View 1 (tube, rainbow, N blue to C red):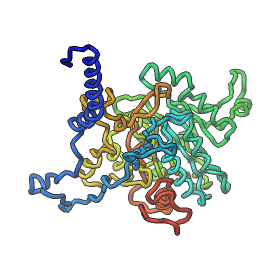
View 2: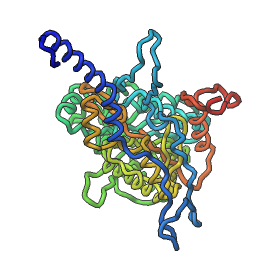
View 3: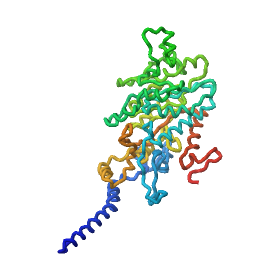
View 4: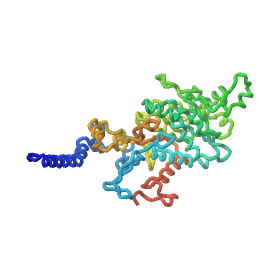
Length: 464
């Protein structure tokens, strides 16, 4: 740079800038990652116990809980089914370096391919466990549906006609749209979540019952004021229960209790339709087969709404009419609150992983806290410096678990881990429940045990 010749100075400056740029590209990313990297996760040492301030090591101390949940040994895609691991130096077939592709949203829904695969496979396991039981009247319920009925439509295919009873699917539409203006406009343009879209998807399927958010039955023909009662009944496309029938349904079932047609939380939240009113318990009382809900799905973008749905089904939980319930992992979902609700109705709570269901409600408090703090489950870092480096491209954004684009119905959104929770009754061992867990574990479609077999005799251990 000190040379008298301008061309030499320019050449030296160019070489110096090139060296600085190359060094920054090599060194800055690792430096930025090192100074902002979250503290390494590990099991906590212990918890306060009777007679001890803090136990030096984990100790049950006479408690009735479980400590052997080894979340650190789970594959990275167990609770994020769209995770793709790329090893250093890994290349594509054409020799180009392999890079992680953006996770896309499946057409017709707001879920990713991995999420749809996981929940569809679990619902299929539920359906398979009830396939041989033709003596009960099966009703499958999807609440707060905001995917135009996509998941419900996929699910009903696993319940083909068998025996004298036909399985019926009930879909209650959500009227909630994304808060972001651009995402909301995109959702409206796509007819996203609209009741009419759900009706169109199930058009011609006589074993589907579609409801709006307030529980009003959709799919009814237009009725003129001049019609008499007989003409009205002929005009209706589906049977609509009258007030007397609804009251009978609310009194029916094992508990024989009278409830309201809607469930209302103490803070005056908008009521949600009581799910018992959807089910024809009057036919059960006539000895025409017991009513069973093999699967209840609770969608939603907020835990407040999801708890409202669960409260509306409380008496169905209490008399064990519902065999399995699946809950979407909403952004503000509190796992401990969810466990507390299911504990109050004597149900077990599980993570729905890519390969197996893992019970979490029986974990010791400190173990559950550690599990929820694990990077594979915990909400991605909110460290502003690390996020700044991500914005500058110095650190990959993969750990934020963002899927979708601006054109997606809900826009770019964080993939919650695990994407779903499930619950099953406590204190009851039934063939269906055991079959569900074994079917889901064995026939997975993921490496390491699930999906590697055609029959139970072909099963092999992970890594073998």
